View (cartoon, rainbow over the protein chains, first blue to last red):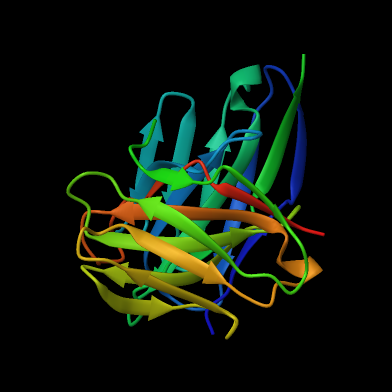
Length: 111
Length: 114
């Protein structure tokens, strides 16, 4: 079945630095979504990408969908303490209703 | 606040027991999803209902079952509980059944099996 892999599992970042988390699928995806879960909280939708090569920005966050629609990335610039949490990507294959979530990248920030 | 409610917030029970987790979706949402999140693990999709009908199934154990009622609330039943069933169970809802829909997650029910 479809698998969505995320790397790295943990990311320790100095405040003010940039980092990127990557998401890879074994199959072509029809769309990919990103969610953020703060410690002790629930996942919250961030964004959805649908088109091949699509790039979307939300302030300091840049999301990209690969040309082959098998991978995606989330790049955060000038990391702040508010960025702490676990970032999940989730994708659906074209013949599948369900979203497959990656294991997440847990981000901690050193002030 | 996502608009999705889940009860109870915490549940502590013993092995072999049966529990029911309840979820009320956002007003107007027809789809309900159930996920299991174990410690240090991602979100494991269990099952999806759309307007009362089962729409998609993930790695849901035979000991687990769910349903969505006419008023669109959903219940997840877990029986013959094992220690390994201890986890955070999330319910999410979306407007329709399509895979491109944003999912709104509830606060979760933390289940502890002793």
